[in-house]
Image (cartoon, rainbow over all chains, first blue to last red; front, side):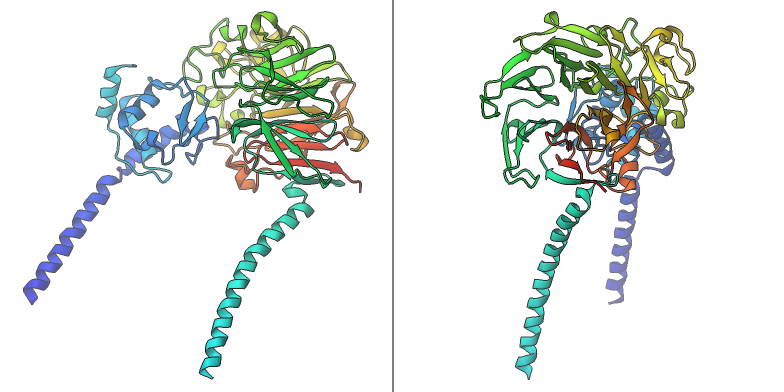
Length: 141
Length: 431
């Protein structure tokens, strides 16, 4: 009886540990989030607004969209090279162009995208500087 | 006894349910009654009242009221395949009880002149003959007046106005913020000369009665306007007036020259008295309402103080605080409103977004008194309450956004909202 209880306890312990590690791996380090927030406020907030919800018809929302939460390369590309044509997000069209940010470093882009993918209710994996570097190396298509 | 208590219990349940259902109804009724008593949610000066003419029409942009009271609404997005709605009040209570639609193109502009209804898409102008019953004769066969105007998404709304000499004026907004090589991009220089000015960034004049015109048949009536959505032909003065949407992002693009506080109110939203050949300076210049002069844009070497080439460009006749987004302009010619409103200007401010991180502002209709065709006094908020709470206004999440203005045959003022698609009718009942 004691053995079984001990084994159960151990199992629960392992399970909890795994959960904690898993949860931690999902949440980006606070240093990254802080850096990302500072970049967001300087480069993004004036259009996409403090709550990331954007402005109807002009600047798209960053909340829960496939553009933000979907494939990272596409997202990195939008930030790095910008968009000239209107973009459709959640069936709504937005007309303001997205400026290019080629002057930002790989680290700055990775920090701000990690922040955006994990703010305003969003939860998605971090974007690494290496991933940004890769996209930059491919060049503007 | 047991049975009675059971019955009592059942009765309680039923009455609770009924009460709950009623509570829902009561709230609704109360809201309706309140909205009538409370001017359909609007805050107005003493003696004025408002009723809701229609709601949830979609993206209701500009509006016009025919001499028989029919309201025509231009939609920016098709609703059930229609881009123009006709609202008719058949029982005289002011509310539209008949809504019909036609026109298969989205757009902003709409006007009535000399027996025709004119409407614009984002690249063309159409007209519809009104028949002897004062109704659109052939809703599915409009005549194309103007076509192939620049439409690149950004600032593509084509506002229209007509004079008494057979001309129609159309705004062709610049598809750019400040004509940088790369629009809105930090570090990108301004193009000089700005090639956009050849096809946009001004108001063009066409014949109101010729078909299939485009740039070669038109005249660039004025230039150097970034974008204007509110244009109006003032018949008393026989002049064109326009409200400009000033440039964005002075702080984001030039943080070493402009603070958040400056960006909040700069540049001014300018009101123009437009003469043939006027040049209001975009993209090289903007108007600083504090310094009261046209300032050289930083994309062209400006530092927030230098005037340079902007010294000679045409000035606004009035300057409003920045980013408020004037989407409609109307000079009031009725007699139903008190004397002070006659020949003065109403302006519908759509509300700001580029003031962030500072609080957003606007989302109201203002009045500016005029004398002999020029502003005479300071502006005041005429109709407010569109945004919702002050928090809704500050965060830019306004519930309703004023976009169109029209004067009814009885001298009432109509306001449209392009967020939900509500239309209000404002009347004066005296004190």
